[in-house]
Image (cartoon, rainbow over all chains, first blue to last red; front, side):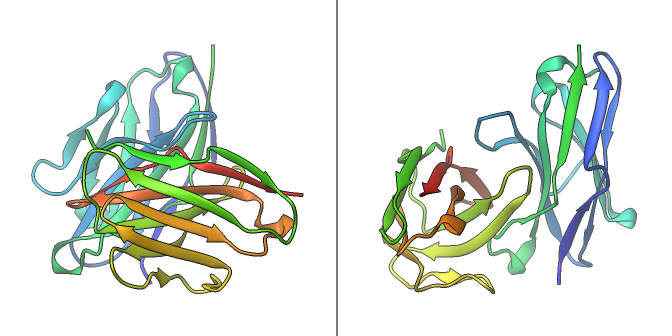
Length: 116
Length: 113
């Protein structure tokens, strides 16, 4: 079965530090990749997505992610985090192409805590 | 665009009663909607896929007689938790599919006393 793995469960950083959250998926075919953020008490919001094209994707709030097909990875990065980035981050995958049912497979989530 | 609403945002009910949660796509039509459950500090667990005009598809381990899903129109799906028990207390989130992307509602916090 397809799965998504996020390596870091809880990350604590100081403001201005750089961020990289790991995400790997297990599926050999075409995939669509997503990163979502859930701020405390708020609903899930899309940070960025990759369907095809340039594997380096830029999202909102200064986030970016790189799709490395050979590594089955889609790591999220931000050069300088802010206290307001404190949130839960979820990596998710849908199967691409004709296998796409729209069904998202979520990773376990990573809690990011940014200290002011 | 692509706004999804849920109602109610919070509900408290007594054990044994039923609760209905609505999920609406406000500015687009959605043939497919999804229902998730999220426990504190955990990821979203897909409960079922709701398809307009047909029966919902439930994930393994989800009781379809307990969690009734109806997708009667292209903008509305409902989840009814029947005979609720304290262990059903959770955060329920819906999403609506538009092209290849899901748009999430704000969630409903259900507390069963």
